[in-house]
Length: 272
Image (cartoon, rainbow, N blue to C red):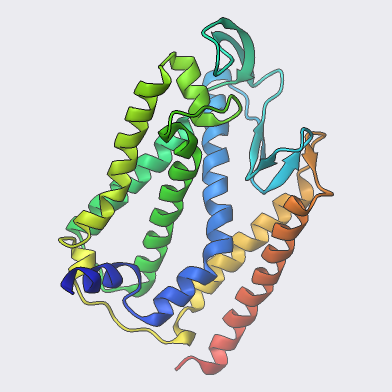
């Protein structure tokens, strides 16, 4: 069917585009986590004038909860507000929190996905590497928003989650908040409708072979190096570095770091 041909043309016009989209996942995971936590940090900086500590890597916190990353506030980057603090109670109380809007990363992710959707719909480029990079960023932004808001879509709440904190601060009922969240989800999943008429779905793309992704590997190697470096040098009492949640992703980043740079070197021998 023409629809599925265009959907395939958007996501992986050839098999190597699919292979390298998979190879990009470790670098993409770090990249999107860095954007997410960086957004928290910049939001706090704008409110308090101080930049908080960033830890853009997966780990368990001191309470045993898994986090993809964290922005750690201190006395200079925290503010005191009065808001609901419990999902099951309407009572409002004073709370110290990181400065800035708690759901700013979700709004940034949603905004990025919408901007890229407009790019995909109205513009075209035959360059397969530009397409791969923007497609991966779009995927990362969409997953970021969906992951953060999934519980609220069904009327749930988690006092420690960004999207739920937004609901509590804005004092929005769970029903209305679930409805608003559903609208945002529809914006993202409208991709499966507009892709049929998009330029990226319709236009032909240059075919690639396995050894054509030299500079993609270079970029991914740099991202993995930064992910490894930050994972090793950033420490805090609230970050458990002895758990599998920290160690396994770090090992995977190291393995992919080696692969990216080995591939990068081999392209000078095998790329024609």
